Image (cartoon, rainbow, N blue to C red; front, side):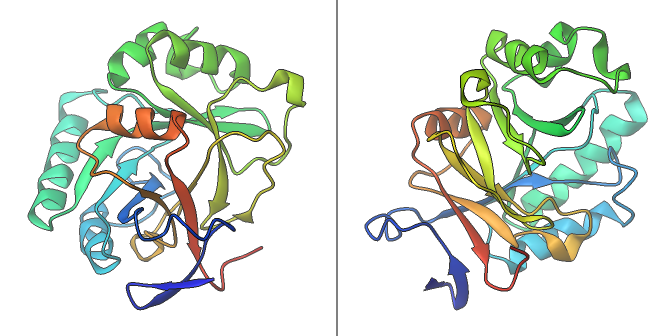
Length: 227
């Protein structure tokens, strides 16, 4: 356990990294724009992200195309502008439903990912393998989110696992692959309750993809969360 920015957080056992890993990102955040289960005014999120001293967040709405329609694009654009005004960078990813397990996808081009996804986003029965394979085709990062069950080691295809989840707690990593964390916030005050630290400033999704695949990321969570 460490104290960082005046708060108690839990990190892994590596005592050498925490001074270098200073860039704070919440990689798993939902908005009412694309996730109906997130029932709140999305424009509240930037304020709470700023209170948590976050460098950035990734919006990972459920099975949702970024450019679904003009009205939706306008709502997202307004939200991104609000993040910028609060000094927090917001980037776009997606959470894809795959039976028992959900997969977080971080693509440089979300439209390219959606276009190559078999059957499009209208499906709700994606196979983990086809989602990860599609992510690989477009150079995206794939992360096993809050795993209710873990595929066998010989079936591992994703790039990383969500070690800490702000809602569901702590998850075991039996694979020896990189670990990340995210709040899974469905309400603005949940933002930043679990987050990922990076040693470099993030400017775009490709930076997250590179650093996570290199293992240069550290999951953290606030003490007192589940698990």
